Image (cartoon, rainbow, N blue to C red; front, side, top):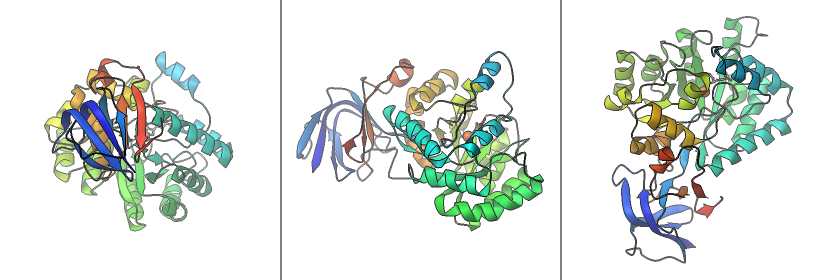
Length: 382
Ligand code: NIG
Ligand code: FE
């Protein structure tokens, strides 16, 4: 069964070879894109959908999210908005609530966030553990995450929990028993490399242990201050260094020469009232930039890629084209995926029909729900 999406006013393909096509059409079959080109020149299909001149983009690839948690940090947010700084200390509040929650509740809340994301055009999401911080709570967090995505990330190294005998003991567990329990459910290993979380040696040790267990490294790097995270990402060949809010010139060139994607998370700067990362500097240095939500109850409780894209354009000097690219193709690069994030022939038919003539409206009309239809693997889900 093939479907022709006809009369697309503007197709953003995400494919660097032919990024935009005006007056376009796409044919999808068996969940994949089989043809793209100018409307009227299509090879025909079993059914036809009239897109009515609207814009079509690939489904968003949200490559950084913390969705398995319970509890609420409204009070912390309110205090922050009246001047309290963000310290990441609140992670422990969520850890306590997550440990106390049953599997069914955690799964239900994760499902609700994934549904929220889909409604806004996100068709691929990465989900991290990191609010369990015991062997069993990390394992079940990943087992739940796995029900929703194959992009699961073991973040046992989020912070040292208050009940750990010592930081060294905790790192031993993260690289030992906890890793063994979690590795079967994870594709990635991540460390929060930051003052107050894990230092350079601990980060290297944890990522190396993860790599030996078959996981691929990524890092929470340089979020709250300068630090070694971006350099370690480059040195270890991580797919992505995430946050990248405080970078030196050396950090930028290390990311650029190692081909590490810089994943920027402007929802976190918005919700913690912090200065935004300098996307222009990274782009000008040739670094591939991804945009993601960082959806989590503490520093960025948004599930909205369009919101992050609008922030990137307004606050981070990205052009609308650079922002939509970072939210699709960039996210796919951050997850080392070539089957999502673009609508080139052979890619998954994951796409969004925007209620707008151009992707520019994602930034131009902030806060407006523009995802008129969301398709995943050739099927309309929204
Ligand atoms: O990516 N920085 C570390 N982890 C999350 C925040 C976690 C929290 O505050 O609950 C982040 O921003
Ligand atoms: Fe994060």
